Image (tube, rainbow, N blue to C red; front, side, top):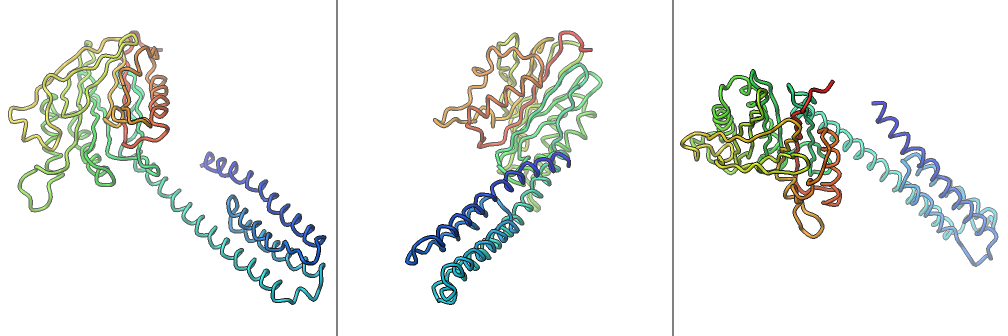
Length: 371
């Protein structure tokens, strides 16, 4: 809360300073108009003062400047020729200032209301993200973890990408996934899968059984009332992993999701999936069950899990983000430091804004325990 107030103060202070500009304009126009020849009238230029104020000030500031402009216009008429104040031309100028000033005040009121609504929407989206998709713990058993979520929607903080982790008796279970589609429907489907994972990750004996359970959960959750088949247009790609504590082996089931990348001494290696599975929600295609693949994740290595919002991020020329090429030679061993550099590099590639949600998890298996 204190941080929000400080940000508000930083925005208000420059606004107060800028008020000097329309005030100086009113003074300058008034003085020049009074000293100008009788056939020259600069009064209509006073309307610029409240118009400029609306670009940085609120309703009160605009109303004050507009009132000063009306007073200045009246004063000009009195000083030049008291009889001119009663002329239809001068009265029309005063009425025009009043109408423009009132309109600008109304505009600022509406703008502030919408700004408050937008701030409330942002607050709700941030709260929803903390509930549905909180950051992963920094420590999961012997593993050091950092997570990042970048939403494509400018005013949202959550979308259809997801990740979750759970500790088991033998190691750490992780899931990263991507719901087909966007908007609140994708958020709802992501929340359903995350809930199923958190319930079952501790209970299912094997990784294959866990994935089968998740597929059934997605299938039934996505089933429309009255339907008897779980095939549909919505599905979720995901990679589910078991990172064992006792050795450097990682077990994995990849359900139509981009493969993990292991960074060893600055050299990235993509962990190809010999036996890919269909996305969750289309599990009826996997009639023979789920095959568990494995790869090595040695002490000192970094494991990178991500969604296709990373690899499909395009620059201004339409070139995809070359993940393994860009991270080659990176020597950061701390997940937070690596992820900070990765975030800056990805946003630089796309020019600061992603077209799709992106989730990234960086995991370190330390060579020696940290104190």
